[in-house]
Image (cartoon, rainbow, N blue to C red; front, side, top):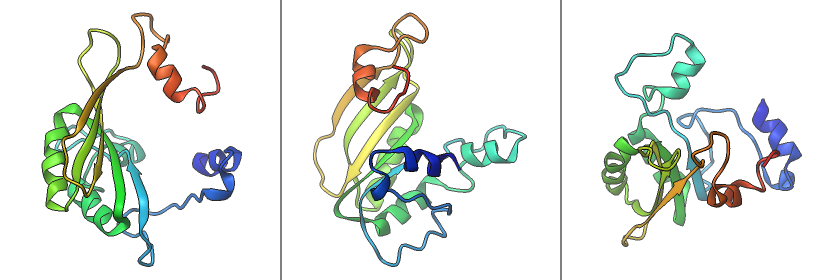
Length: 163
């Protein structure tokens, strides 16, 4: 798997482990974590991709948002966080649902593809402390396709080979 190879090449290779498991079947033996990061499938009740792997990755019938948050409640320690990336249209639904499991949104980053474009995605960070969320915007590219903004480049420079 690509993740195993990436972990092995990482400067943090001794601290990383790749496990191939669904979240529902993940046996964590009661261990709690500081951080859970997820790019969950987000399409609900929409036209499915004919390819099984693409449909599974994109449609939430295999991992509904409620299941993700329920499992995160078991996995995240009292001071830990969960971070998800979702379509902007699903952000308020996620914030309300997370509160049912004792998670509060403390940070939101709205992702904008290029200046003047509509936001497509949002990064939401939750923890168990209720406070006013810090809301930011991040524009990925300049008006020139493939040319990253200085803010985005600074954020990902250490992780992109060709930047």
